[in-house]
Length: 499
Figure 1 (cartoon, rainbow, N blue to C red):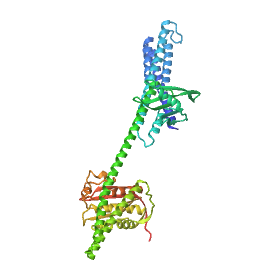
Figure 2 (tube, helix red, strand yellow):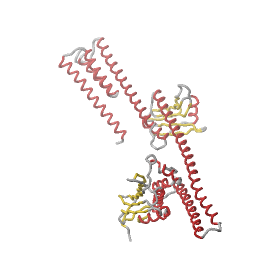
Figure 3 (cartoon, rainbow, N blue to C red):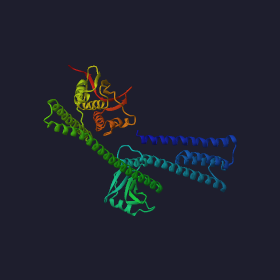
Figure 4 (spheres, rainbow, N blue to C red):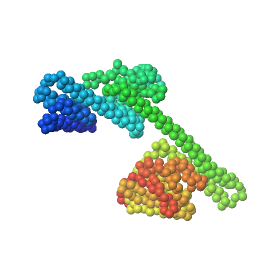
C-alpha cells in the first residue's frame, strides 16, 4: 500500500469512528431526555442536538457533521415535535423550529468545514515555505517545484523564468503541460498591482471528466517581475494562489542571493589562493634560486679548494632539489584539483610503503631519530602504495620540518577491521588550538610555521587530497607531553603475506 493510499484509509477510518461516536451521542441524548428524564421541550432537545453537531463539525470533515445533523433532525422530529412518534409536523411554529435547526446545523457544519480547509491550507503553506528554505543538495528550483506539486497535489506545476527572449521552465507533476512563451510574456507584461492572476482558457487539463484550467501567476519581488508560476489540476482560492506566488518569489530571490554569495565567496577564495600562492612561491623560489646563483658564481672562483668547490656543488644541488620538490607539490595539487588522482590498489607490505615514503624525504629525516612500530603482524594490505607513500612522505617531511634536530619521529602501522591505520608522531612545538581546524587548508601556515619563514602550506592539503582519493580520512591530535600526532585511516583488505 502506497503512503498516500494508507493516509486516505486512515482518514476514512477516523471519520467513521467520529461518525459512530456522534450517532451514539445522539442516541444517548435522545434516550436520556425521552425515556429517563422526561424532557419534552423541543427547544432543549434542539440545543442539545446542535451542541453535538457543533462538536462533530469541529472535529471531523463535512460529511460526518452533515450526517450527524440529519440524524439529529430526524430524532428531534420523531421524539420531540408533535405529533410525537411520527415524522409529521402539524404546527407552523414547529416547522419553523425544525427548519431553523436544520439551517443552523448545516451552516455550522459548513463554516467548520471551511475553517478546517483554511487550517489545512495554512499548514500546507507553512510546510511548503519550510521546503523552500531547505537545501537537499539537488537543483534548488527543481526541488522547489517538486515540493509545490507534491504538497498541493497539482497535476502540473512549473516555475518559468525569463532567459533572454525565451523562458526556462522548471516543471513537476504527473502530466507534461508547458505554457507558450507568448502566454508567459503576456502574463508578465500585463500584470500590475493586484492583477497578478490570469486564466489561460486555451490550455486545460482533463481530470476525472472535467477540464481544470491552467492558472498563471506572476512572480514578483517588489516591483520586479521574476517569472511566472503555472499550476493546474487543482482549484485554489485566489488568496492561496497569491500566497503561493509570494513564497515562490521569495524562494527564487533567496536562491539567487545564495548563488551570488557563493560566487562571491569563490571569487574571494580564488583571490586569496592566488595571493597566498604568489607569496609562497616568491619566497620559496627566491631562496633556492639565490643559493644556486651564489654557488655557481663561487664555482667560477679559481681560489676555491677542491673541498670548497664540492661544498658549493652540494649547495647548488640542494637548491635544485628544493625547486624540484616545490614543483612536484604544485603538480600534485593541480592533479588533486583536476580530479586526476585515480587509486590503483594492489597487495603490498607496509614496509614497501614506508621505504617509498622515506626515500622521498631522506634528506629531511637525517637530523632526527626515526622509529617504526609495525602492528600489522606480517599481513599484506590491498591499497594504492604510490598515493599512500606520497601522503606519508608529506607527513614525515612536515614532522621533520617543525621538530627540533635530534628529536624522535615515530611511525606506526596497524590493521583494524577493513582499514589500515598509519600514525606519525613528532616532538615538535605542536599546533595551536586556533590553527587546528585550518591545518589541512591549502596555503595555510600556522603561527609556528610563520615564524620559521619557509614552506608553502601545501603539504598537509596534499595529504588530505590524496587520502580523500583513497576514500579515507586524516586528522591530527595533540601529543602528550609535546608534539603532534597525525593519523591516516584508509580502507584496506588484509591477508597473510606470501613469501
